[in-house]
Image 1 (tube, rainbow, N blue to C red):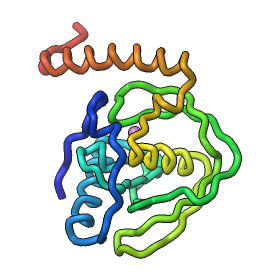
Image 2 (cartoon, rainbow, N blue to C red; image 1 turned 120 degrees about the vertical axis):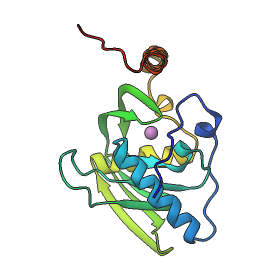
Image 3 (cartoon, rainbow, N blue to C red; image 1 turned 180 degrees about the horizontal axis):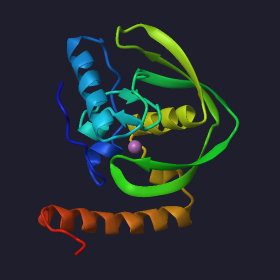
Length: 182
Ligand code: NI
């Protein structure tokens, strides 16, 4: 498996809708395993193919809490939301928009139809965090970032915060060995 670089906002690949996968072949399975490894390493609860620069409708999710063994990998290929219920508001972050968290309104429960890693159609229903993660990742496949799910005021605040994060990341790259505290 290979650890992949995560694309950071702003980058056109993050706002371009992805193409459906034609056939779930060895190349797609390799992509899925590399994405899973990259998500676990980050660590994150979900990762979509555009976040590693691939414009295909592929996403991986694992909402297992931080300190528990990660063995609940969900692979969604060509996912579609076929049912929604209720409302939920939760803080969300995004591996492509690091260190920015905002409350986002989503459906509380969703059912998704997708292909699994064997290319078979299946359906999965998730509530709470799983529902949020599936909606967030499927948004990525449509080229939609979580800024677009925020009110104008929150979007402005989050974008301002992110500009500061980009400055911090640049500073940290330029000063890799510096101790901040003395
Ligand atoms: Ni994201």
